[in-house]
Image 1 (cartoon, rainbow, N blue to C red):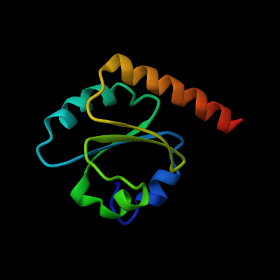
Image 2: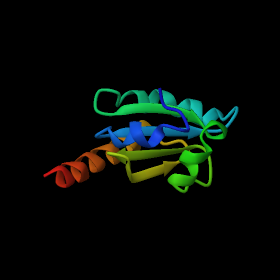
Image 3: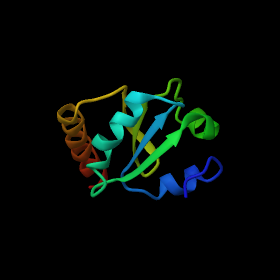
Length: 105
C-alpha cells in the first residue's frame, strides 16, 4: 500500500506508474478516474489525496491538485493538469511509452 513514508520505495520499483493527485471533493479528479483506469494493464495506478502525501508532493514539486503524474521507476517523466479527455490522455500515454522504451534500451 502506498503511504507517505514509503512512496519512494514503492514507486521506484514500478516500471510505469500513474499517480492521480486530488484534493477533497474535486469533481474533475473523480471524472479522471475512469480515464486513468483504462491504462491499468500497462501501468500501476494510484489515486491519492494531496493532504495525505505531503512528502510525495514535496519530492515531485507538486504545487496544485488535480494533477496526474507519470513515473518511470520513480522518475517523473510527465504530468497533466486538470481533466483530460480520453483521446488526449491516450495520445500522451503513447508518447510516454515510446519515451520509456528508449530509456529502457
